[in-house]
Length: 139
Length: 387
Image (cartoon, rainbow over all chains, first blue to last red; front, side):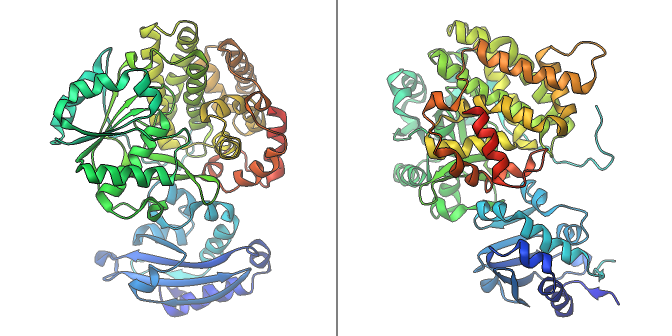
């Protein structure tokens, strides 16, 4: 059954898929740190308020995925933000996340050199997200 | 030339361009048209010594409220913070940069701090600005960096020992004033090195994974102008017609790579530059033919366009042959302009190469290279060939 995007069940499924991926464990063995995802509100698409999601990773393990408030989201090692439509494109693999950053379609606060060095980790996390059967608010 | 069916891109180039011999005297008019009245000029000691600051200061008169000139080659986070403090003390409402890439990139980051507050290190990331920054007019004194029209900057991060990129749409300068007189006194070696920076921007924009038709067109014409005019500038620095054409080429290449981005040549030049302090354009110029060889099979069409720009693509020539001709032409061109050929000629030690190869893997530019770079051993191999 398709999971509703931005629901806790959806985040739990994403977390589980990362935790059970042997390939992820190998690729991400040097990654340390939290990444928050901020989805800008878009009432016309069913996102009336900003969505703040906290994800945390440590040496090949995915630790904790949950919703949070703005202050906590902004305290993550890496803060990625953007419009709903961009996140939907990323989650459906219609938009490459690093390309989106370079084109200004998504924003990043944090050490870009670290992200570049670990770009395979980033791509794997996105791949696993895209593999989920997801229904989006405006589908 | 073919583009994928799913071609999609955003082209952005908001900078107003003023060109002409003596056009630096337009700076006061341009500043007034932006509604500004208190300018701090950012420059460096070499520019002052060459007498170029006098022209700008005379034109601005009392509207020049300060000059900050303590900007080194390979500017860094600390320099930006000191410059921003100075500009705030002066009550600047506009920054005018008079210099090369380091001066311009310092000024761009100062404009962020003046508008958004904080320190330079608070603005690490991509797309973090909330709106347009403090106005910035650029008068380049080299022809290569293209920074006068891009929204990217490169800074040396002293704590990491690495060059770091910023990419902020809102940080494009408002006005670029290209005055060929401002580059007239550049010595031949610096003319060649900065010119190869522009050449490298054009080639890298063409082979970037994010290349697109507008950026491609700008890049091809930049290569055309550089191949025809840079040798004349090296031979006779007072040739203001050639100087002007090379300035325009550098600007076109800046618009091109500012949108299409760059690849492995820049990642490698940033990395070896951070370690061995090789001037950026010189590192680019040495590495470019070697990186083109590395990329060749994945950038055949792009290098076919380089061959067109150089005028070495004969009618009916297939892409692969044209691409190979472009690499030969590039190598011959660097020799023609008496550009250094090896990293060992410009102060690099063999022991620097492994560390530079590792640093290269975390440089944002490498993401756009047409041939995927899987590990640092591939980079090391190129460095060794260029050593």
